[in-house]
Length: 284
Image 1 (cartoon, rainbow, N blue to C red):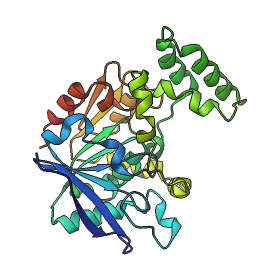
Image 2: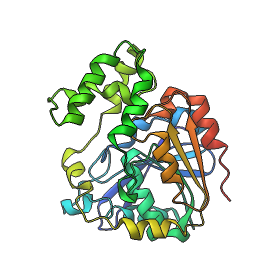
Image 3: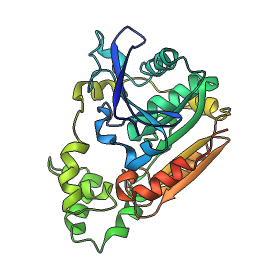
């Protein structure tokens, strides 16, 4: 497997952008979540770089990518054309895309706007906001209650209860963090700084600052011919499996893979299973 390199290119408005390339095989463009977090936390996606050449995109204003002149371009819909700029820079007819969490907004909107330019789409614990799939408190309760035997459960559950009741404290957001992870041990806690690194808070505030055309997006996705793989964690409170099934149903050619024992970062919870699911996904 080749060592990591960088490719620089200009975004839709001339902003200097960077993608980090690692691995070997058919290229797979990877869009990080956050929203607006540098791609470094993705690592090699649990060893996926042994099967695919990963182009890990640093969105504008994060990592090695430049800060745009206009903060409006941090909006997820405006960043769609950064992916198109990358495709053109690479001289590729189509892009195979992988997106995690909030990064799925860019990838899905790209698929809606440029359906003929998508070879395949892998959505990993995707945020459902741009497609209007609603995750209710009851959905999250049902998933969270499966963790009752965990030693941290009661403290994290109490924080969830305050959030649901509208009486959250400043500390409650951090207190529910264990519910995002399939494993909550010392090794995972030590990894948290790396998982949270490289976030641009100003950009994140602008990311969803738009009137979403949910109906139009869903209609476009309903006509998408590219195959889609949606990887959901069995224990992910952000996108519980039942709602992941609703998300997958929006596409005419979608496979839903619910990873047992995984949370919001399935490549960390069981790298072998995650890599097997993604590398075994055979786009047409």
